[in-house]
Image (cartoon, rainbow, N blue to C red; front, side):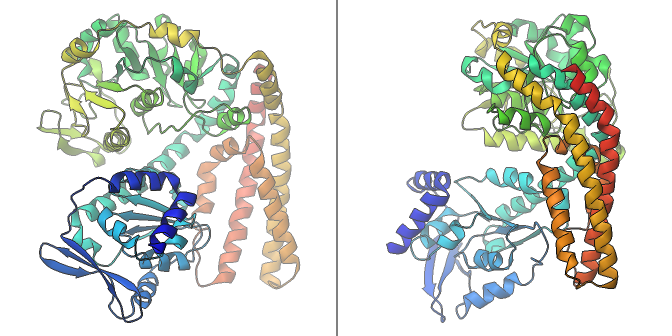
Length: 610
């Protein structure tokens, strides 16, 4: 009883949300895929587990020296690299997790997935798990408690720089006991890693457009709104209809006229031209893409429609638009500005498309029912968008795949749509307890987790109450009052000075790297090395603290990535690793200086416009 209480108290101190969910879940009668779980004392005195399933006993630990077994198991993984993500399928009695933690560095993360709560509940009573629960490097993702957190957490902590050093494995016996859950575990890792790589490629591809957009769009902060400010005023029981631009939109677009004033109609930028042709004005629009073609949003009739957007969005679109602008994501620069004045964006995961961003808007605004329209994620013949449009993507032919359609038949999709499809399904899972998602697309891919209905039936059943969403959106006050904005403006005016200081510190750091390289070649034990290293680290730390550093980093991302790729990997040749580190750092600081100088006139222009 004392062991159990200590475990509970540790969870209460370090993981109160997890404990709350655990106690809620364990109090219910649940059916687990195990007939019986037994504990046994091994020869070395450790408590081990034996799981019975389908009449067979599976021993999860050695009956002799389970601790040594766990340590030997952990030795297979390379834990010496920096910023390692370790991923373990199966908690068991905690020995494997602890053995891995003992080898991981302080900057590592350990994600533990446990597919069977019955096992965990039993060991809580007989094994001291307090050191694992108290370790801030550990993330617990357990079936029946928080299984959907795994993908989100892993995606959040995985960066392209630690993809190469990522390690994952399974607790002995778990792959046989829970084969389906193990397959899902591997698929989740694959999807998270793929998303990180796609985001890296996207940022590199758009970097030269994103930063000029961000600087040009700073002038809209004065009159813009914040998405979270709308939450108290939005009628959450009224449905939200997200209008995407898939080919099937042609089938039911006229039905949207009946929903006007009875649902929150939110349209993506690519759907606007098609809606205008049918005399449909949505309550709001969404745009995200730094390179979205201006012609999608250049009709004067939509200039006053409220626009959900981000700072990185195409500045031509934001400049043409005359209505209120509502920020939906903090990002790098605007997030820092708003955080200083305690303006909270709240959690927000925009995904990779304007349609996923629109869904996230509805989640953030806490709608209880969301209807998807035109969200095909598949071809109709060779058509990709409503109105018979055909739009291609890079490497399109290589990513073609046939998947389940909304009608059960096979439909043709492509690699970018498959990423968005997976994003929708994962996101719908995470909100299933507070939001119903109806797919009224009437074509395209099957989005699992949605309820399929005809749009006319959705409108007949759920759109009966009149609401003026346009009025609600427009009546919200700007995020900053006049006094606050003057302080924000002073902050923005300081950006040019910050950029000059970044240039100076980057030049100094590059010189210190050069001196370090020369010393390493002729006298690696020279005590001056420590002083030079401290100078470099100090410059790095100070550069990173500047408000504008993140956007300079984005601008130079393609070049910097080339030099960062191997920095986190540690080899057996420490001297070579050190030379590589200083050489890479020197090249990055030099490129930082070059990029900052290129951005200087853009910063000066942006500051003059606020």
